[in-house]
Length: 138
Length: 302
Image (tube, rainbow over all chains, first blue to last red; front, side, top):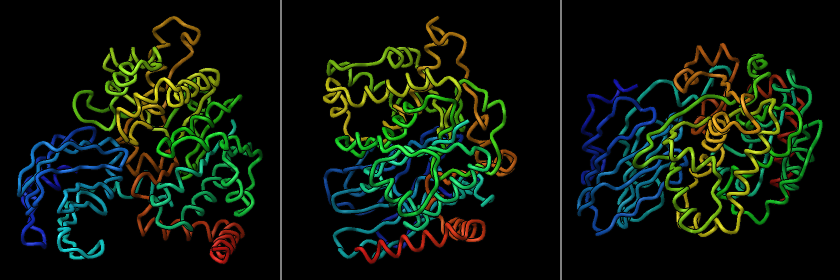
């Protein structure tokens, strides 16, 4: 699974002001942390991070006007549960979706409904975990 | 061995229904989980509340051998504590059992090493004890203690030992029901104890603490009592369907075990949703039609 992301440390997403610039993979996605650096024009002074996903937690390591660095802690079977974690700023939304680490970035100041101007930075770590355990037996 | 399911509707209505591709697929999963498992385990039991019984039994027509609405007693509990429903179901058992999550399908009977085990679960998992983690046993114990709360000695011991292991409980059960009832009661009391409310509040909302009280606590209790020369001496040995998380996610291992768990985002996967519907429609057509009728009535009823 790791091999899928090793060579993708910089991503530019559809919104020209935002990019995920650093994915620092650890030795394994199982029971480890990784650090994600997100660059974008975030106008707020403070960054609020929430994590409704029970098997993923996070901590903001650093935050500035135009970037945040977030540590993600991923549990052994949370690889299937990444689709809903959120990194929220007061002015920007970075939202992961689907499977793997796919960030949807939409500056809030532009308004609009969820899904507007979404840009996907896709990382597919493969491994079939999106199929759950034994999903092919269905 | 009795097969047990639990359904506490309050967390489901609060936010967990969004975990599924659609409400229809949630119901179809209940049909498949029950109907497949009952081939191996005809003694079936549903632990739920009154709304859950109306949905699954009255509405969907699922035929459990026994149904308890004892989860009505949880109406005062905060829905963030979704694991309370499972723990109450564990505590309710008096004979060897397997609790099956409604997103788990047992295509094969469990191996005899599980059916005869003192305690068993799906697979072991571990986590970094230090720093940010989805499990935070140290923070939980510290918060409860600092608030003058009730902290089980098993939790204190596990944290002192820096235990970083837990058990993934897609399936959970065993023959040592006295121990399981004890462990479940420990988690329930720790959540509900009045002296602990300040501590839980101090920790802030973190749904991961459900995993602490269910999946970490069981390992803490087993390891503690195996060493403590107590009343559960020697009888406690944990067995797993899969030896590790990697094996669980290995399709070959899952096929060999005859086990499916639509864990996490798999419940929303479009392909799996299509397969789930096709499977129920083909294998259990009467149940499938009953599901459609129930949904139709629900829509008409507003």
